[in-house]
Image (cartoon, one colour):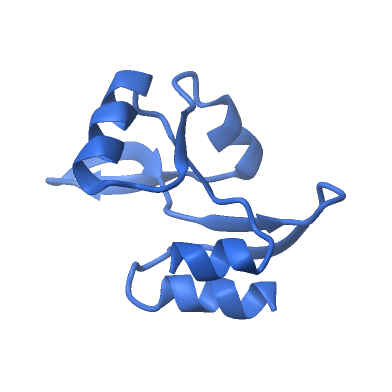
Length: 98
């Protein structure tokens, strides 16, 4: 739904703590039409409050809670989606943009 989302006037960016080289490989493999940004020092993750304690194989780790933020032209966050599940999410974002 990338075309629909950009047609609604949005710019789509992905952010994670992975390295730029990891993002390049992932983007190429999945033919992503948008930029993936690296937040290697977790500064952006901290600002957006997406670092959460999770259980991984019985151990507590700090991981990213998959989230989507819609930010308007003035830089104000207008919509926040937490604990995002892939199924149906793109449509929810598109609906919020309209």
